[in-house]
Structure formats: structure tokens, C-alpha cells
Length: 240
Length: 240
Image (cartoon, rainbow over all chains, first blue to last red; front, side, top):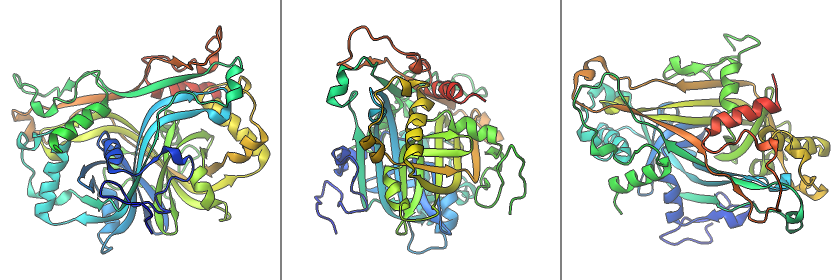
């Protein structure tokens, strides 16, 4: 089925090919990883009794495996071996594009759609490892600072893992792009950038005195772009 | 099937009931609308040949109808009358919650999952109306400032509409919430707020001289939260 594939890129078939605006499509792993690793939330699509469901959830990547906190989907997956088909989508909004015609109004964005078969992480040792992996991906080394998970908590936590079979990245990173003849029109046009920004960190009101902020949260500085913080935190936790 | 419904709230069934953490679930239309109208992007889940697909796309609301730019889904919907089941999800990330145990690490968020049957807007006059509705929802009055759509553009544009049959909102808007005995531990804990912020507006480099910024983009001021700007723009375009 695949017409192009290298060790560094995903196979391209009808399922993941970018049909509309193919110039925005990317299938190399570097592009896909860069978008995934700058995000904390993904939207997961799966089917339950014929009904498509789209659940937002915290996720992270280990190589070509995506993991997420699977409370909702886990009820369904539990009874279906070897797993269920899902689509995991991550989207960053970077700008609104205000053009001279309705047709060319657009947005700058970076998105990934990743396809595969999701299965439950149900071995207790693997679940314990996933709990640490989840926390440490965002806050490197934090699992060692915390009160350890109790057996009850480990039991109550559900993780889902999906090896990426195929993925595509879609990126628009341009200014206004109007029809050539429209640039002569006396119409205001602009790019309005948007960033997800970290605000002032608020210590827990019940924080004990004299506790310094640990290195595990170093990436998260007030005023910084969350994208950058997440990408940095990822690189520290998963050095190439 | 529904066990509670008023004119101001959606029917609650197994499909949209919040099972995990029911205290975070809301079914009143005011809560659902408030989350939808503060967003520009939704993630749409649908099923194509048994494969769930999750597509990010610009969307807007008119009463209980959700509209979106349906390039991807439209190929599938075109051949299926009266329509196809979809789930439309909108998520805002408001804070990272760094707690004293892995189990209580969390995020503050506002999300909506809306269910219904999507159909294509294929009448040309309705499509023309939807093009204006799309632009004016975000930039009130802008459709009158623009070079009008050409017949070719109208033909090339696909919209999908989904009357909301059911929806639920999920909201976490709290500080760190640890187990009572864990507050005594010498572990750093905090809330890290996150906002989507508008940057410096960049005029199109080919902008003609002397064109003032129109009122249609007034809501989008540098430094402002995108949420607030989108909600304001919505209220101007669709006064209650």
C-alpha cells in the first residue's frame, strides 16, 4: 500500500495522505515528533457502538509509541483484543490570517494526525512505569520527589498505548496569501499571531515554608511559550 | 432515554454523561456555549470505512447548530444521506497542576463534547450565507469589506452543519487538590496558569498605504487573551 517509506518517515497511503493542500503535508518523523513533543493534550478519536467519540487527554511519546491517560477509552478497549483503531490528533494554533477575500482567510497551525491500534497497559509493573513516565516527561525527575503511588492508585489509573503505524503533519506557516490581483484592493489584511503563554506560577496555598522550586519544573517560566517549555522538558526527559 | 432535560439544557444519556469525575460535568446550554464561543478550532471525530478520524478545523455556532469547514469530511458525507454521526470537541487548557503525588497531577481545562448528525451544506445560497457567517463570526461586518466570493470559490468551499443533539461540558478550575495527609509533606506544589495570548499584529507586507484597521477586527488586541477576544467577537456578531 505504501508508496514512500524510509526509516525516518511514515508510510503514506490513502489513510494519511494530505489530499487538500498537499504542499502542507509532511510525513517525516522529525516533523511529526516536533509537533507532538510541543503538546500536552491530544484529541483521541475512537468508535463506541458505531458512535465516533473525540476525547481530549494528556499524552506523551516514547519513540513511536504514544501513551495517554485512558479513563474513557479504557472501558471499551478492555474487552477488545488485540485493540481498537484510533486516531490521535495534536493541533497548535499559531496565527489568524485576515485576508482580502473570505476564501483566503485562514490560520497558521501545526497539526499531526497519527493512526494505530490502541491497547490497554494492564500489567501492574508497566502501569507503575507509565505513571513515572507520564510525570517525568513533563517534569523531569519529579517522580522521585513525590509521595510514591499507592497500590490503590496504580489500580485506579488506566493507560493506553498506541504504536504509530502512520502519521502526517500539516503545517501552515505563512503570511497573508491573497490572489495576485487582490493585493491592489484597498482592504486591510494582516497576520494576528497567537501563543500559548505561561502565566505567574501560583504556589499551593498550603505549601510548607522553605520549600524551593525544584529543577523538575525548570522549563516552565512565566512569560515563556508553553510549546517551547514542553519541547525543552521533553528533550531533557528523552535525550536523543 | 434522557433522564433530565429542560429547554436550557441537553438531554443526558449514556452517550454524554460524565462518568469519571461527575462533579466536573455540566449539561446546561450556557456552560456549553461559553466554551464553544471562546474557541476558533474544534476537533471533529467521524468514521470512514471503520477507521476513526479526528480532524482539527475552524468552526462556529449559530444557536444549536455547529458549522465547520468540511473539506475532509465532506467527501464522505456527500454520499451518505441523511448524514453521519460525529462528535465535535473543543478544549481550552487553563493551567498545569503540579501536586504532591503523581495521582493528583492534573490540568485545569474547559472542554465540550457535542454529538449529532452532520450533513453537507450544498445549496449554493446557503453556502454563500455560510461563507459570510464564518468570516463575520470572527470579524463582525468583515464580509462587507471584502472582495466578494466568486462562483468558483463558492463551489470549492465545503461546509458541514451539525445540529447539537446532546452535549456535555467538563471543567476543572481549581488549585492543587492533594490527599489531606499529603499537605504535610515537604514537596513543592503549584498551579502553572496558561493562556492563549494575541501577539503583535503584523500588517500584510503588501498592504496599500493609508488603510486603517477596521472595526471588524477590534476584538483582537495585542496582549489580550484569545479566549476573551473570540467570546467578545461572538457576542457582537450574535447578540443574545
